[in-house]
Length: 117
Image (cartoon, rainbow, N blue to C red; front, side, top):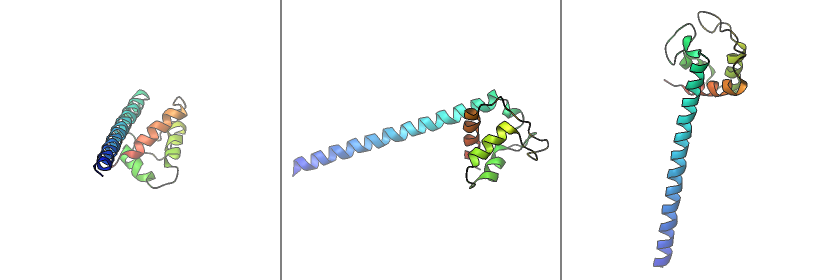
């Protein structure tokens, strides 16, 4: 019986270590995603007109996230607006940005939609 208990404890410890490693990997991946997205937002100069919470020439990303929260395919909609431009998106219309690849636009849109109060 003691042998079974020791074996059981070893498996429990092994599972706990696996979950810890998986959690750490997910956290690092999330941080890497945010770093990649913010780098892209700076690379494409989105930060000239937008900020997380401050109104500049365009609406804050928080407002964009709140506007699309709960909508099906919000990331696809925002990604398309990044590339095609938008009317009524702030003090001025947002011009199209065809130089932004679909993949980069998707990364930026997903990040913008994660911004919360």
